[in-house]
Amino acid sequence: MQIEHILPSDIEKRSFEIIRKELSESGVSIPEDIEQTVVRVIHTTADFEYTRTLMFSENVIEKARKAIREGACIVTDTNMALSGINKKSLAKFGGEVFCFMADEEVARQAKERQVTRAYVSMEKAAGLGKKLIFAIGNAPTALIKLRELMDEGYRPELIIGVPVGFVNVVEAKELIIDSDVPYIVNRGRKGGSNVAAAIVNSILYSIDSTRGM
Image (cartoon, rainbow, N blue to C red; front, side):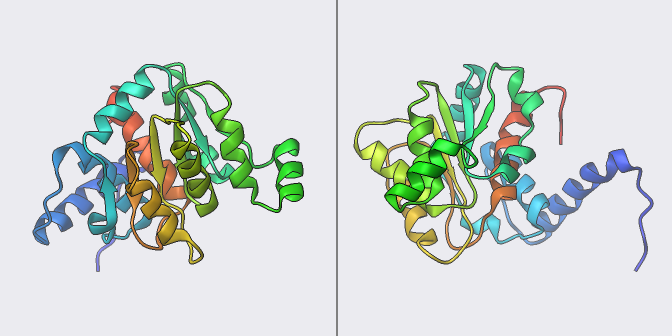
C-alpha cells in the first residue's frame, strides 16, 4: 500500500477520479444528466450502492437547475444539511436556505399537536409563498407531510427525499416517488443530511461555472 502525496486543493478532484475509475472497472454506466449527482453522493458516503438506489424523476436535474436560476430557495429538515449546502453558490441566483427545526413556534405547535417538528416545519415552509426545493435527510415525517400538502394541491419545485433510519423511512420515500412532483429519492433505509446536502450541491455546482468536479 502506497500513500499518495496530494495537495489539499486536489484531494476532491482525485477522489472523483478514483470513483469514476472504480465505476468504469465495475462496468457501471450512469446516465450523463445524473452522473455528477451520483458521483458526489458516493464521494460523500464512500458507498457505491447509491448507483442502484438513487431514483430520479424524468428530467429532474434540468428542472432543478431552472428552479434555482429562477431564485428558488431550499428548505431542509436539519441544521446539519443547512450547514452543508453551499449557500454562496445558491445566493448567486437569489436563493437562500431555510431550516425551521429550531423555530419556537414550530416547537410549540409540534408539542401541542403531538407531531414532529419536521412535520410542522413543512407547513411553515409551504406558507412562505416562495419557489421551494425541499432537501430532507433525516425526518420521514417531513416527507409524509409534504405528500399530504401535495394531495391538497401544493407543488414544490423538487423534493430530495433521503432520510435515513428504520421507522416509516422506506414508506415515506415511496410516497414521494408515487407523486407527480419532481424528485430525487434514495430507496431503502440509507441516506442522511450529508447526502441531502451533497445532492443540492451537485446541482448548484453543475450550473456554477466557478466550481467544477
